[in-house]
Image (cartoon, rainbow, N blue to C red; front, side):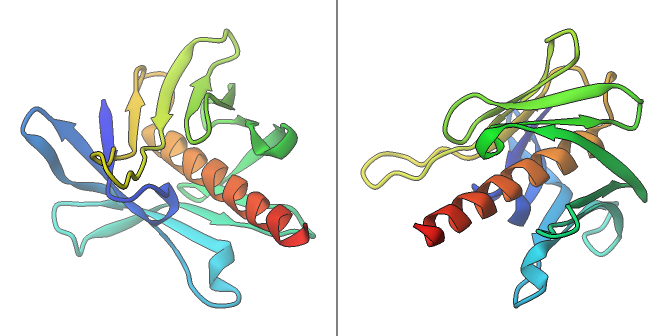
Length: 173
């Protein structure tokens, strides 16, 4: 199962299934608020049969003091550990297993199980001035192992947290 993203940042993007003819209608919509407090909140909606029928699938709230809050389908997801500069993050998924998103480049991540099997790959895409742009994609190799909502919510969280941390480090220097 492969998703094509409408934007390079997954936290402000639609996730559409890739087909041989292009892409289908959006299945998930991730949006981050604007303003002083809105930038900390990201919601992920699963789109039903019409663009107006959206069901809340995931919520992300970034908080410097109290710790981040990530929930999928109303259940809070436990973030176990994150690596230096947010290059990896471990979490307990809805099936009770531990998974890790691990950086595989400047904008790419691999989702691995405890047995180091690759479950999903996020390719961050790129924008070029003189050559064609490459869209961001999310390829899920084993959708039966982990819920798609878990995968999408956690990659949105990982990229959002990493971008916020990079911006804070740049502002401090």
